[in-house]
Image (cartoon, rainbow, N blue to C red; front, side):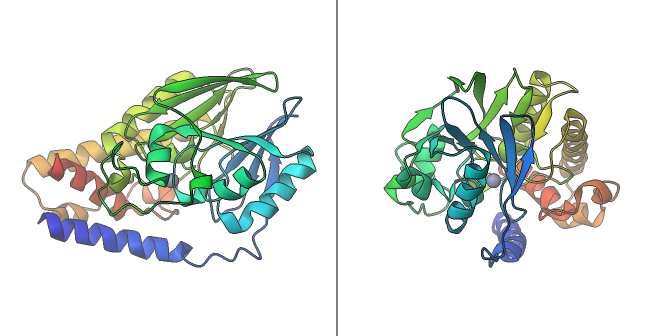
Length: 300
Ligand SMILES: [Zn+2]
């Protein structure tokens, strides 16, 4: 059962990733969306959202998409404020958020991230257990300053409160909150209007994702500008809606799992029917989320 389940989950993920397999970087256009006078979201729909914080201390970047886009991303940053990226923060290790690390490091950026981001990029199995054969990235892409629970950063007249949420989207997620501007970058712990991708193979967990969302929702308020990992600028309400959907799906799948239903039985119940309109437009469809929830229940 377990191997069949793992197999079907992999097929689902492979099918989904195939959509992203050949992005057209030449035609990619990095959009610059102002949040306020010194914070901008940089966006290209084929990869994760970035945030640029500008000011007297230089350019600060959160996430950096894929390496072939680094020049375009840097051009977009230069249009906001000239000068190199001095500090680069990764919300997690996935390539659509950290793929530009090597290039930005070569341009002079110092990279910060949770310690498991470094462990995953450097394939250091002395720090974490890998469920798949680890593949190291070039050393220049590894974060040089890491943290386990959090970090306080004071730059460009902002206090940046960085905190780790345990086993959520991955095992190395960092949330960056700027209370003075009331802006938060959630990384992929939140994708606007989409079911979450919970990467069980990289230490993510459904229960951890829900706990992370609930924690983050206590930090922000109705006025907070939420920069999601993917999708447009969002609000606390948008995040609450997807958290509530995942919670009720988790509970429904759990109830049926405890009644002895198989994954196939549960998928046939179409539990996500009422949520597909709001959250089913991303690369994680309802069946993939239900499969992830079931897999977590059946392996714990
Ligand atoms: Zn991700």
